[in-house]
Length: 244
Image (cartoon, rainbow, N blue to C red; front, side):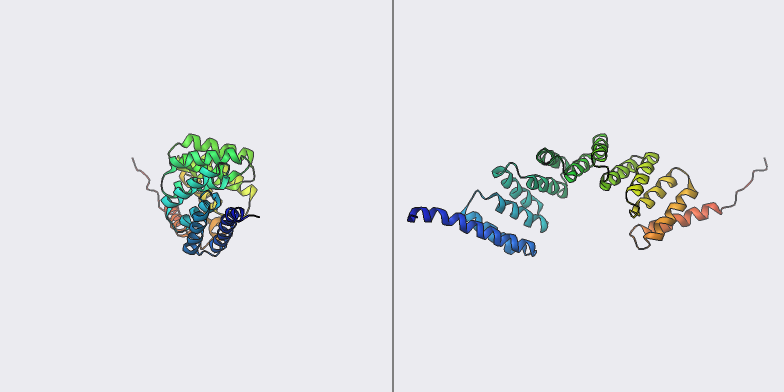
């Protein structure tokens, strides 16, 4: 090998080694050290998509979403087929409070990997946060049809239906969740709330009790207990008969 060819091959090798070192630091949550190694790798090889992606992950984990977005975008400019980079771009836009900006990235991720339900779910969430509820419901439903065991799709659809005051439809979806996964006890709370809103107080109390039986220390437990007490008081309120 000539001196010139050695000179040309060494930067690539060194850049690769630095990137691998950075990857190991990232796994150990040593984000600042990983950033330093990724930047050193880029000094030697500017078109290293993996280093840009690694920088994006580091800044995302550190809560600096604008910088994470910048580096994920740089990664996609070099490698247009990187599903993970587009997915992370979408997630960072959501975390930064820009759901409408997340949509195009999740669409691209789905185009690259149409079988992965996670990007489809996040696309639905993005439309929901943009208050495009009909589109979000359609996406959740398509996801349910294509991945009938994917509980998260049912969960988000039922939550959105409840937000829209469509409690009867939401309770149907929540019951489907329990058939898929009987240990998904949060569904009991959701069904109880639906019955509560529909005026079916005894049914609401029954599902509230089921929820508390399985999840007494849940963050929702305090609200459920308070609501059950109010329902109990309402049941014991004496009715005043009119003499007219």
